Length: 76
Image (cartoon, rainbow, N blue to C red; front, side, top):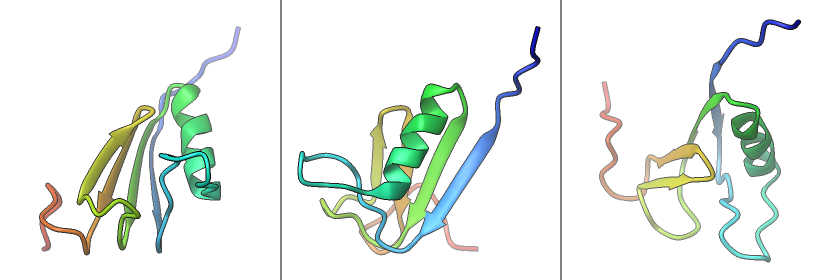
């Protein structure tokens, strides 16, 4: 029997693509999807969204884009 721990993972990068269209091939998004499918909480923080939204919730992944409008994340 294995003990699996649920991790809270944050990926930070510049221009992380969201796989919203068949042409999008974001490597970090694929990594985030795999981690989420394995039961981990995954958050992405990036500079700008390819679809112009400050936040995206998809595939169990929470993505925040700091240069696209007002996000729930506040500057400290």
